[in-house]
Image (cartoon, rainbow, N blue to C red; front, top):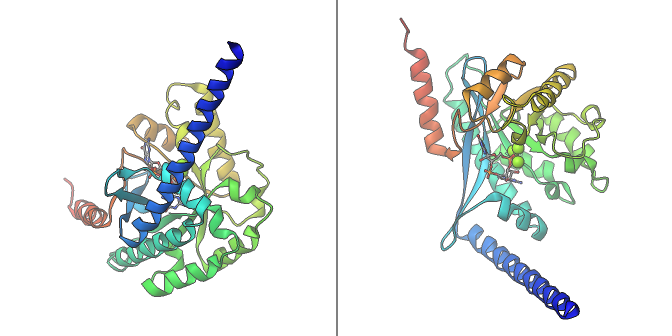
Length: 289
Ligand code: C2E
Ligand code: MG
Ligand code: MG
Ligand code: MG
């Protein structure tokens, strides 16, 4: 009986697996179709200065609205896009869209206002055997976007992978004037030596640390240590996933200058972000009694 039970469990498991494989294959086909049928869009989430709440930039986040499935989370489709290689084409498209938005917003900026910097997520796959420098150069040229207006978010995963020549590419991108950020900092298998080995400008503190920073002293301690290390290495710090005023206050007190999160704004379509910029500017121009 035990044997039979074991076998049926095994069968069950492999049916599960092949179902998952089928799901992946359909999802990949849907991704291809979605690309040609313009089912994708890029949303923008404000990045703010904790000192005064001013918007200093945004993160570009890919959105997929599937005709039957509805909205599909990037956490579901990005891994499939990475495995299939489709991320190279999708990533180039996101980059162009973000550069176009950055050029638009910065050209409309009041003189004297610091430029907005738009962050774009890159997958390790985009560095592997692909002319990423060429793709970035073309996106900037086509949209009239300056390199200084774009930050590229990479993960520790890329820097720990010995296969690619990520180092050379990162040096090239930095030399062009783009800045580089480590996304989800603190969640990887951090060998911290890479922070001085590569031309990194920014650490984005992963949102998983935020939940308990105001209630658990150990979590607060980890975040404090990351901030202090960032300061010693002269890196900009951005806290991700800030949802409450308490979290924002804690981060500001600890010296974290920048933040993103639902407290300040959800990811939104480009024209909503444009409206937000105009509204905020108007508020700032109104003299307060
Ligand atoms: P990420 O780059 O770490 O992006 C931050 C994620 O946190 C986003 O999820 C954002 O919507 C979410 N978020 C922002 N504020 C809050 C908050 O206050 N609370 C909570 N709980 N979540 C918040 P999203 O948009 O679902 O994206 C998930 C991941 O998918 C991204 O994580 C990124 O790794 C990847 N991704 C998204 N767009 C792209 C893209 O264009 N290219 C690549 N390669 N990856 C992308
Ligand atoms: Mg990111
Ligand atoms: Mg992140
Ligand atoms: Mg993440």
